[in-house]
Image (cartoon, rainbow, N blue to C red; front, side):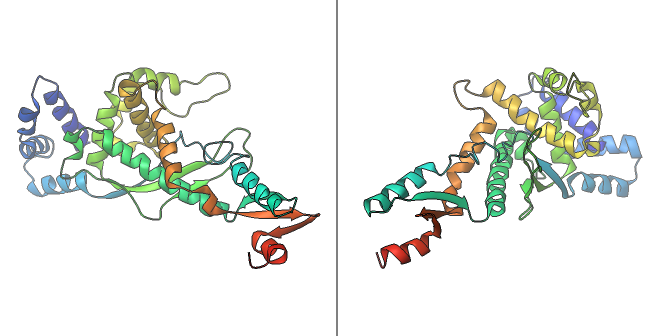
Length: 292
């Protein structure tokens, strides 16, 4: 709550015609001490503990509701290896063998985890990139992925949903509160929240559709799904307000950048069918091509 009040005061001062230089000269320490003294009295120990709690590292789980998943998406589709298969079949045809080649993932779970790791790294990096420097340059700003924290949840059936990707981040209440303040004051935030989180036929929203609720609720009381929604909103609204409409949207761009770092073929191996028998690539070459 202390951070929420401070963020409001700082934001109000920022928008009251102050230049960047004037804003940076604001005595934040005095601002903190004044507010805490008003709330808690002159108990200096409470003041110290209050300031410490604001920047104390915490672990939060986040995800991206816009993650494309692995069902008929950029990350996985039925024809993704067709060029490799046709190329191999042409090669064996030249050698006198009429084959059928099919590539399959060696360890699909490993592939999914590596894609999720690359995607979430770029997702978090993008958040850091688009936040204004007045937030990210603060000495207590922290928003980093925890190593080896990627989790992919895949549905049993893809009728109504797709894969979800999550990771843990190291952050603090001060950072999250500033992200909240910045995001909820972006152009279109009110309309975005209302349109996306209003229940309708066939859809029940479990998130409040009033921006007043989002603003009044302290960031430390945001549940996981609401925090995830806030971060997605930051990226989507930033893209709408600043992006080039002729380019891919920001989530698509993250997905494309992810695939530039991931070579699908490295996660797959071919099986070769010839005269009704199926072989691994090594078996086929040893049996029919010798040392070639």
